[in-house]
Length: 193
Image (cartoon, rainbow, N blue to C red; front, side, top):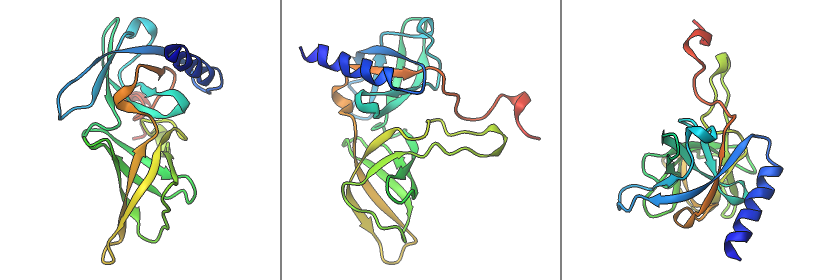
């Protein structure tokens, strides 16, 4: 019954989502204390490519594809220490760098100290686009998490927020992989000179 509920929730999300996606099952987890990486049961044959964004039920950001084969893919989760995404506070639109931590809590750094941050505020992907076709690796508006604590230093021009991830990343069983979002730098021939 639990599996059926999870798959139904993903199918509902897929139906109302703006991007083309494919559902995949988690088939492996790296058991290292230092990494938060999972393996998927689909790869290039299902249209998955390097850098594709992975989301969990509810549209919560889960991570990105870092390796892909014909029938499998490796995803570095948001909570991995090597993961970084630009987040945006839901109310004020202030941005900061969200970095993974092994304890499961995300750290949002470099937020302007003039911004008021309340506990419970949602943080979404900023999806920043610059001139010349340069785009964020993550589409705008994916839920990252919720603020659970804020640290301010009276002498600093920035502050730090701590986030609870929106998805239970250590217990993921099924995910959606976004197939049609192109983030990062455009191809060399299309880059501005």
